[in-house]
Every structure is written in C-alpha cells, then in structure tokens.
Length: 88
Image (cartoon, rainbow, N blue to C red; front, side):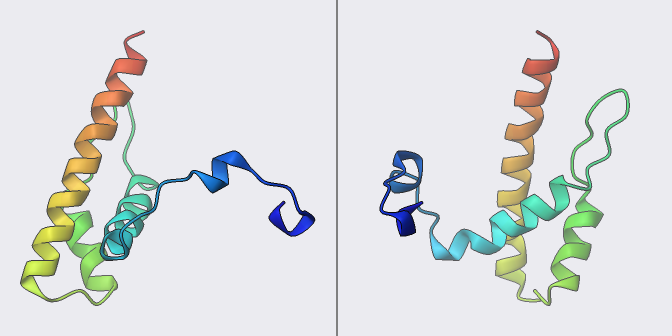
C-alpha cells in the first residue's frame, strides 16, 4: 500500500520486535503451530523446544535457557487466553 502512496495506520504503528527476540518469536510460532490439541490444549513439550533448538543449531547453554524461558512464558500466556475464550 505504501508503494501506492497510501498510508496504512496499522503498519505505521506496528510494534517493533527487538532483534534479539526474533529467534524466540520464530521458535514460538513454529512450536505453537504443532501444538497438541485434543479435549484441551496442551503445553508445548519441553522435548519439542529442545528439538527445535537442536535443529536450528542453538547449542549455547545461556541462549538455550533464554529461548526456553521465553517460549514457556509465551506458551503459558497463550494457554491462559485459550482457556478464557473456551470458557465463554
């Protein structure tokens, strides 16, 4: 739209993601898309996070721990929202 000279407010005001969090967001998106949902939504498995990190060549302990904690935080937030919406 900008190429056509039109301003799109949603794009102009979109939040910026810190560059160091791109990997966390990519990991969460990849893992969330493969989440097990049956009678209820299940958390992303620890083994899945580890496999994602291995597959993507992330072997630094501190970075692995950081990605793990952020993915778990995002996952818990998603699960809470999912349960709230499901309960309505």
